[in-house]
Amino acid sequence: MLRLGVLVSGGGTNLQALIDCAESGRLAAEVAVVISGNPAAYALERARLHNIESLCINRRDYAAQDDYDGVMADTLRNRGVGLVILAGFLPRLGPSFIKVFERRIINIHPSLIPSFCGKGCYGIKVHEAALSRGVKVTGATVHYVDEGTDTGPIILQKAVEVRDGDTAEILQRRVMEEAEWILLPKAVNMFAEGLI
Image (tube, rainbow, N blue to C red; front, side):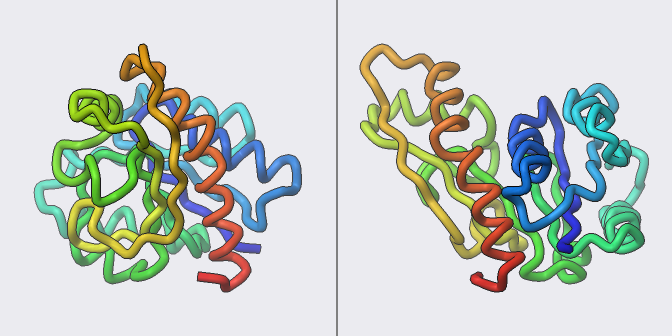
């Protein structure tokens, strides 16, 4: 069975969507390890609650990007990880890491790329930008990770309506419920079944 390494920085709602699908038999993969650079990330607790190995590997503990990339890659390889999921993971992964897992790293982004993406556009900032621009439709994107920021080939997208009176927080929740939590497990299953 495909083993997943899920990289997180915060609450881990997308991680929870994967765990829920795995536990209900709707995921053709298992979450093997969860890694965060933030020891206070609630996602690590989510992993512990489901008996999934959870680790904290902080980028600040490594002088060079290549050193950090090497530790991250070795940690995942040693656990037999076949697909790396970036689920709200903020630290940069360098070219050496990306080369080890080329076409085996996917990211979930809370917009319809190429809108509201790139350096500095993550989390609630994405939804604030969408509301500020006045768009009527937003959504989420699952894409392969390359050396750019949100520039890898798109795997799946799903649109979500922006409604009158939406706040960034309300829109963020709707995008998670109607797009992110659906797309990410679907992309994992497609990868596991050789469909992408």
